[in-house]
Image (cartoon, rainbow, N blue to C red; front, top):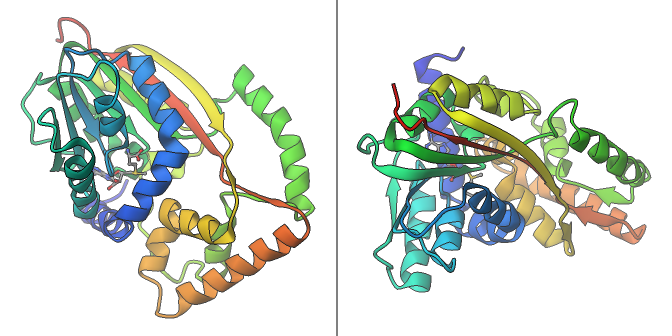
Length: 313
Ligand SMILES: C[S@@+](CC[C@H](N)C(=O)[O-])C[C@H]1O[C@@H](n2cnc3c(N)ncnc32)[C@H](O)[C@@H]1O
């Protein structure tokens, strides 16, 4: 287990790494995660009377999608630990929703929510719990702020759950994609991580150890976290979204913004390293495109829904 100072350092670095890319993140998350966000809100069946909390809201992907839905919830609060992300979410709220009073964004730590007990009907969280060093604390906080019968919907990037039909179907679909990768005709979401690992390796210390961050099949741990917090009716599903990217510049910007581990490593790398990494990245894209290959950024997502018992003990 990590010590309290490790976890605080982790949070500071994670938040700082998002502060500088908030505008780019906003663009990419709308394109890449929009479908997953829509599925999450569908699974939870958010209704017009619901008071909704979005944990790790980023630039507000879920709140904006809910605010534009036919049946907008009664209120939507998005919280995030990164000041830059909250600033961008508030700018969007002003520009796109004319400061709709039903929507608010606050800077807050998921491990310690500054919110009253039982003050929400629905808590959502997309692609955020993998960043929280002690997700068990976040899950307990989420449980606390939900009222009796309150609904939970969590999405995080994950491999398909082991031993499921989804795993078999995904493995079959991956065969052709892996072959074109090996032939140098397909680049995918691990390109920047590979280059950063080779160039920076372990010389830059990045805090590790958060259980959800280090695991790739995240469904069992999420289920366990929800169960331990007291949730019932836990349901797990999984989807894979393929995204083809047309230009090398956009592919770079996407990796640089979304790949969290590389983003943190580049943030603390010596001056000049990022330019070298970018050059190598662009060279590899050019070679692949010259061979007639493609650049893809697939996202695999596990969705967990659950309910707080009607009469919580
Ligand atoms: C990958 S982004 C997802 C953002 C948004 N939910 C989306 O899907 O576009 C992860 C977000 O979690 C936030 N985050 C990380 N640790 C957090 C914590 N301890 N408390 C609150 N937010 C946190 C980050 O600042 C970042 O905005």
